[in-house]
Length: 329
View 1 (tube, rainbow, N blue to C red):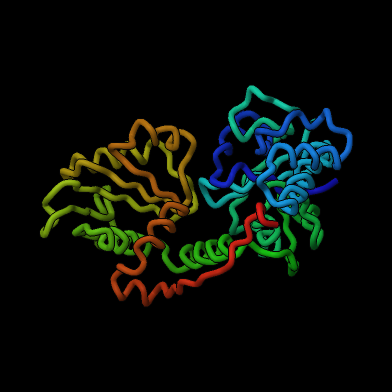
View 2 (view 1 turned 90 degrees about the vertical axis):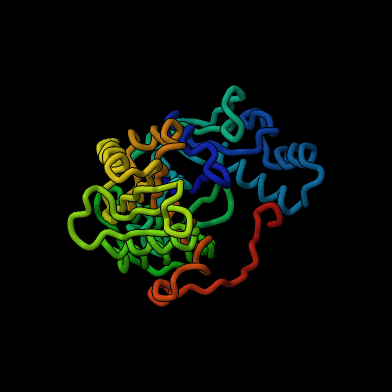
């Protein structure tokens, strides 16, 4: 048995499709049915014909990934799909052979069936496993440090700790380190203070409710010199790990009416239940939902304009690193 990493697009475009249809899928839509190919060299020739503008090393890399996906994955192998929506990784078991499905949406035409087992928060995984699952490639066999055995134990409720040597995705590692720091240092009212600082950096005048009962909102934010102008936003902040559902969203709607706000913002460190996520499109012009990923995105975009006292609590330094895209591998 083995553990495989399979991504759901560079930006998670097919994540929902994979979870809902119980599959993992590869890209390379222009490549035909892989079950018709009997040798890796034949696949490489197909790739050279299909993508003549690509470097030969990149095509060899792609051939290795596609061949592994179609020919080397076995029924019973574990598969990991990192989420781009929230800081979790979805784990499942391969349940059958490769299937070419041209009727599927773009990015999901090369498939393997999966029984999804559990979604695990990134903070629960050891750093060396995160290194491995941060690989840039779309399809990777994870082999270092008994990763498969340790993930199986974690799925069963037990986990091990070992040092890793996999080459990391530094951007994801930095994001994981920042997420862990925020989780530890900005609990409760401190997280509301951080959100207030982000809104101030975005140009809003704000009022932060004092510690204790908040009457349904943690922050009031408005535009204009005194904050009287629209948009006027009622903000609720939850720092716990429990996902928020529609009940909490409806409570925020009630608070919006109470405080005369025409928009709402719900910040939930623990993310949102599926029922709440389904409201995102219909509530787009009424309430915005920030999970930890959204919060970090807005934090990084606004960091230079944050109040100095917040920057002192959250010291960040911008660095430049070389990004090795798999196209140039």
